[in-house]
Image (cartoon, rainbow, N blue to C red; front, side, top):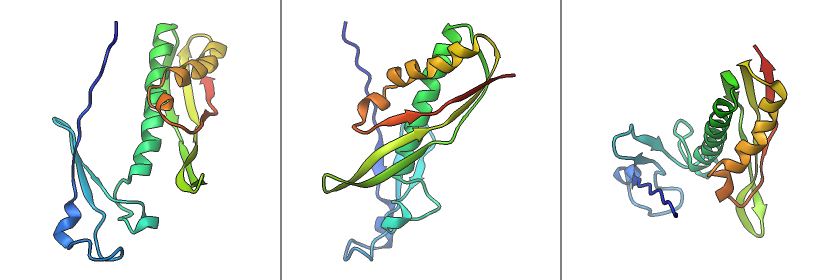
Length: 154
């Protein structure tokens, strides 16, 4: 049985109100991303590409998506294995560089810090590998997504 999941987003270039793309320096990179029934995301390009540093950029959102996907996969696996997670946070870092003559992501490192109240500590550590394998977003990118978890007992 094949299952499909579909997603839709509406993107509006809000920077158009500040003028047209008359030159690379002249136009605003601001946008609003909308998904029906959810709060909008005010975005821009990275400041290195003349964007607004106070807004989310696509690079931030990609790293965040990988981190959130890993966490959600991990929490599911822990719940199924009888491991009670009471705290989870991650400091995710992505690196972009020129590769094959194109600027692209070349690596993302996830550093989840997990606290468990009950369950097998070794199993809790090992489940990060399975969470990585199950993460839909990590399976969809063409660069390494590494993880260096820390798990401790409460």
